Image 1 (tube, rainbow, N blue to C red):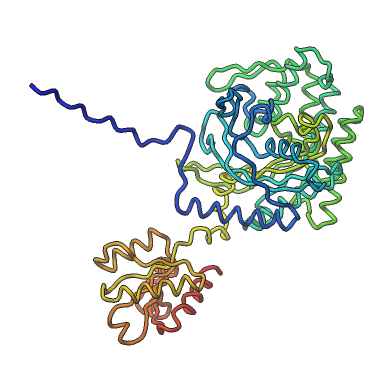
Image 2 (cartoon, rainbow, N blue to C red; image 1 turned 135 degrees about the horizontal axis):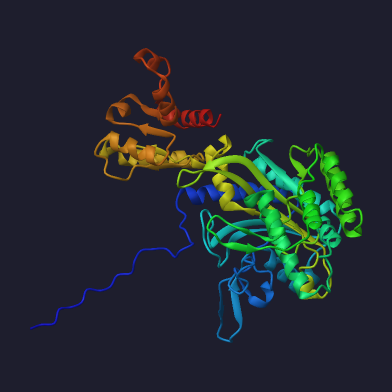
Length: 500
């Protein structure tokens, strides 16, 4: 009896948990957006820098992104020399290494922008992946807050350049020195604090950073005795006194009826802290620089709740927030929220050089911003498919190919239908699936008459919902005849109408 051969075990076609694939329009949309962002960065005088995706663990340092899993925040391995390497978790740590390595050959201030994927070995969740794109810009060597003001203004210009109107976003600014002043006032800002106080300070900072998610009441619980969530899990609190909790709460709720009122409220809260008062003064300067440059409170405003999670920020911090909502993959309506953030980090480069080097920068979350842009009309152009040249007669294939290349030479995205040209209905269905704006139809009859048929698919979709009678279809035709020699001109006209 012959032994039965075992069937080969085929690998499962599954991507690793926490990662995703990008295809077609996803990639195109991202590239279009990155070009738009890089244009503003370049316009502001920043130069492009591309660093390696791999850094030494030593260069990445202790500022890992996941506070609760400090030893697991990065993807790391040992090379053949037993040196630990890791995939970069952001674009700022590589900048610090690059500047320190080549500082003698760089012109100061050094202004660079960078974009690319980063990797974080964190627990994935809805809209949160282990690999994602960032797009950063940083100024190194500028101690003045003029550089911070410029970052905020640039961020405003970037968002508007992507099609988000004024009122659809806000750039929020704060200063970590003000928070340091609050902590100093409650006895939690001393470099020589006992271990217990250091732990308490960490709980306070993490509690404040959860304001958006937990609300003021939830934060106050964490500042005090602790908080029990809906699942029954209990988070240990900072055990602050009632007066200390009141001061932190007053800081988080110090937003006034005007920009100046907010600054006045903050200055009153930190009046006993030199560091805190300096932080408020710096915010006032930033507001002044933005205002005289035409960036009003509708675009850039002080918000005491912005604290930023990473510990290396030393001064002004900022976030860009979209005020619109969107529907996630499960159809649940969600607030877009923060799409970019950054701040001043004057001590990060000190790890390499031993000297404090002033630096400030911003990082834009590309994936979240892409989702948000679907809500704005200007982003509709991102999803335009190719003009489709249909195939009505196999003997005219060379003519169809010539038409397709003629469109491409005139900077019009186009393709000839390469599937089974069984009927025109199948080809038009393909055009709809590809989100094609126009289908070009030419059979032997059209050839004999020297014309082509141009079917405006976008207009046809609109008219099908609005028009009720044949007479209305005749008055507003979605399909027109055009001379073959003026085909390109007519296609450009239709595409221009679509963009309007």
